[in-house]
Amino acid sequence: MAKSCPVLPHFALGVLVVAALAIWSVFVGVTDMSIGELWRSGWNDEQVQVLIESRLPRTIALVLAGAAMATSGSILQMLVRNRFAEPSTVGTAEAAKLGFLIVLLLFPEASIPARLAAAAAFAFLTTAFFMRMLRDVPLQSTLVVPLVGILLGGVINAAASFLAYRYDLMQSLASWSNGDFSMILRGRYELLWLSLGMTLLAYVYADRFTVAGLGENISTNLGLRYRSVLTLGLIIVSVSTAVVIVTAGMIPFLGLVVPNLVSLTMGDNVRRTLPWVALLGAGLVLACDIAGRILNAPYEIPVGTMLGVIASGLFLYLLLRKHDRLT
Amino acid sequence: MIAARNLTKAYGAKRVVDDVSLDIPRGGITSVIGPNGAGKSTLLALLSRLLPPTSGSVHVDELDVATAPGDVLARRLSILRQDNHMTARLTVRELVEFGRFPHSKGRLSTEDAQRVDEAIRYLGLEDLSDRFIDEMSGGQRQRAFVAMVLSQDTDYLLMDEPLNSLDMRHAAETMKLIRKIADELDKSFVLVLHDINFASHYSDRIVAMREGAVITHGTPDEIMQTGVLREIFEIDIPIHELDGRRIGLFYR
Image 1 (cartoon, each protein chain N blue to C red):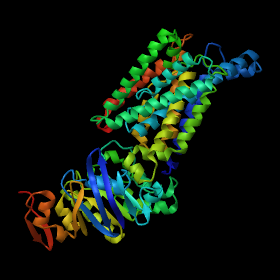
Image 2: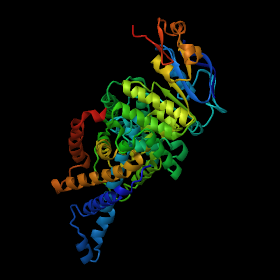
Image 3: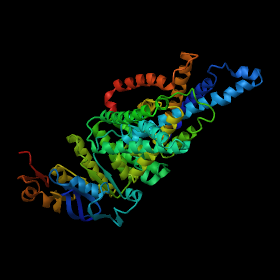
Image 4: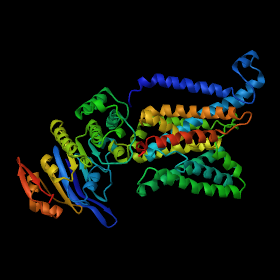
């Protein structure tokens, strides 16, 4: 709602930095490639093919997934009204994995959209159940919320592991659990455009999510249909999470760290913060992926692992910095 | 006028609000008093559609609270409750801007912006307008929320224990401010108050509740009598008159 003109130059600068990271990301990899070389060789067929089949899809996937997961965290924090909420601390991610697994077992022939719908529905119902549960638990501390959520996720994860172990699907489960973009190829990432749709949808309804973050009473006072906003938000989060999990695997902590960093400096007016959250989410995932490809070349460190290390460090910093802000 | 008819809210067999029929006229300040558990806050929540009643109805002027669209009602009546939960981290100005949400749906017109400025000025928050509400003192935050409902520009403003957790100075300032808004801007307030002396000093009408029922209502002079207060609170409160206002000495 507020005029955002003074920050526009900063945002433009941020976009430039992320664009630079994206270009860098395109030209990092096992096959040597540079713009100059591509130009000199007259767009050599083999290199162009690598570019189109692997490099560009990977970079696009990183940007879309990063933006979507950071946005999901932001929306969840507003809906749950807790700074520690994100898809991997409220059961959403685990439920999506279990959903995929069950569809894979019961309907092995199911189309990708059908699988996705089932996983998103699982994620939606579990997160809704979690929020229903929170209404009944008299919460003494903000830390109780993520603890209950992680507990719920753990139970679901145990069920998923049991099923996966029993039916020899451990590999699938592992690939959903740890974000890794090395397998991204043309034709195997396009679902992620759906998560872009979700991110844009979140922006369209940004004001409603901010009001929801002020609580049910104030939302009702301002004439908002609180339940509808919750439902919409959970759909955005569930679909985004399910899409990211099935294409690249879960990117943990991103939805926790990025919105918190943005909130510290800019507050929680979603209309204003969401562009930053999406941008920084994309930037952080790009940076982690590039680092993961360079540090241990020619092998790769999965982006989920890289991010786990960096983001948990950042998160500890946020946690210890000024505790009263979190309550 | 806010008109409640046979309003009942029951949780299982317990009737928290029990068959309340009440007319709250337009204008001035109406205070709701009563002991803990009398159903004051629940009544306020029922009047403002935060809770659905078990039975009975509420009308705000011609609007039936149960069926009127949320945003239509939000331009007629606002409700402010105490909520200690973490809220979204907004600046004072952003919060007050969201008070215009029922009118603007997020896109502020020039008129909306003007109302926001007025509300901020009215509460003396100009210097704090870019501060985050979670970094302010309880009294300042309270003023920011009052500014939000003020910019909402409704005929009726309902407030549940607006003096809760405020010290003496801020409590008195808040009540003076509410009186000023009621008089100058022609708004109608319904307040849940714990302190009978604030109710006595600042209200035009007092509604007394006990065990879910409205047991009496009237002017402060009618309610502030030892006999009447004994019926409400079950204690003997000597009443003294000071500068034409009645004060109950319940401290002993």
